[in-house]
Image (tube, rainbow, N blue to C red; front, side):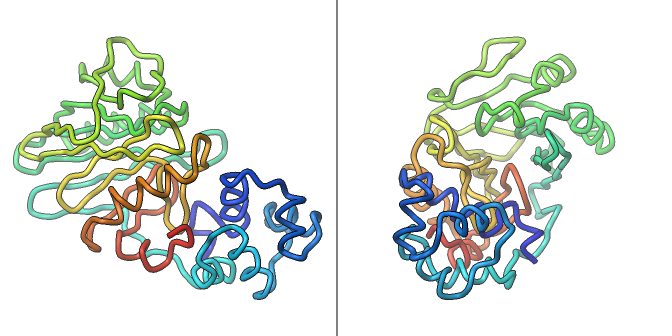
Length: 275
């Protein structure tokens, strides 16, 4: 089942190691394996033994049992591509960017058909196709962070929809046709009758944020099913913000990440080795 996840065992231990500023040599020595063995594990060409998983988990501050389940392909979240309830609908738009799938989303208020476009997945044509196919009314573009695989195509979407674009005040600003509107933790945006709350989830980027509404949270690269985004700024900030602002939500809230399958708060509390 590990193929269903954005991150496999090698990704997870690599992110944890880099986030703690450990070289491969340092981590390998502490785990009692060779540097070559660790490099091969991170490159998916060597499967670890159970004892190696437990030693690496201890060194990298990961939950050993959760890590073992991913290493042995024993867990993946139930696949859900579309979420709908009485008030909202979520459409997932996934397409490769640089050879790797990236997700964009439509958050639709069912009462009004007003819609937020969340990230662009660098495929604005696909986003616009979905907007037209569902005959909805885009009213806002929400950016979880500024990396190009999530923001390329922004200008095309702005031109086609006329929407204002919102991004966290601490995030570097991508290329845009108009001034970006800055948001901060706790701000509330409206999409039709839906109230969307901004929460801080930095660590992957300086101003990474998530957008929460009712039963859905759009989390960018802060957290993936069974993993977290690359800790380019701070692994600890990423873990703390996700724990405090996302995993504190009800277990049934579905998390929609920038890569890989959607998951739930409950599943991540049970299965994500970073927590």
